[in-house]
View 1 (spheres, rainbow, N blue to C red):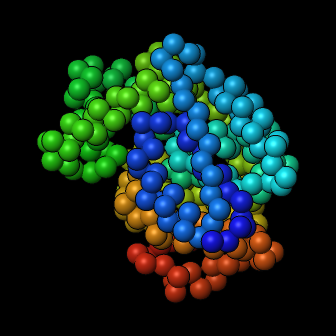
View 2: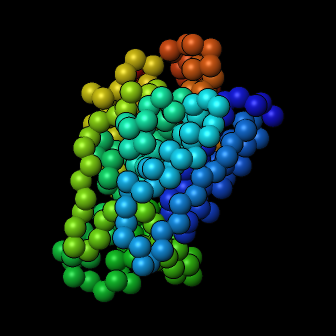
View 3: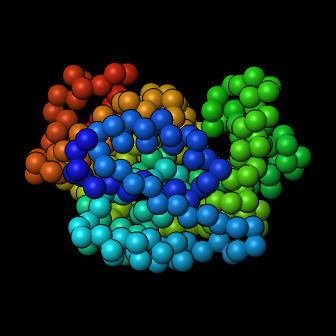
Length: 257
């Protein structure tokens, strides 16, 4: 196992951790990877600022900047941290985070709950289909329970009463964006919106399918893309994807900036 790069996977949605495991396992086979957890209790007010400060307390103890990786709301936390403390971040990789970084599955859930006025169970069942594609009845019921737990334990700032906006834009640190073409939450429009904010050397990696949890279904290509990104930074190269079609398994679209 390589001791470099030193990477940190951010996890602020305990109920969804199972979707991260295949990619975490793939990355851990090649890199020294740590996982940072934040658990929100039902009696606590959601506070991204508190999580940013706790993350900073942890990263200050490191002897060098770290590569941060996060999916959804965890990626939002990484982005907010990188904007505030860029000197602590070697790079930032965001999965299922669009140009409006606060948009996550919960924002869609609460919007549907408010405007459709359907029972909670019907909206959750529809969200399972939107996030994961068609599933059997028993599987759908299981994933509905997972999503229901996430509503009570995630750091997502949204609620039935408000959807919290956060300014569009990236950060000063090297940035990689990963998303899926068929994601109905972070749709291609939200992904393309990143382009004006991407710097030279930043990456945008699109997979054709997998929806919101594409990294669960296709961990190996995503692991390969992240590894190439980190290796390019280590070597000082700004264009590791000149022959991207030779490096992929499923017709990934990879763009340099």
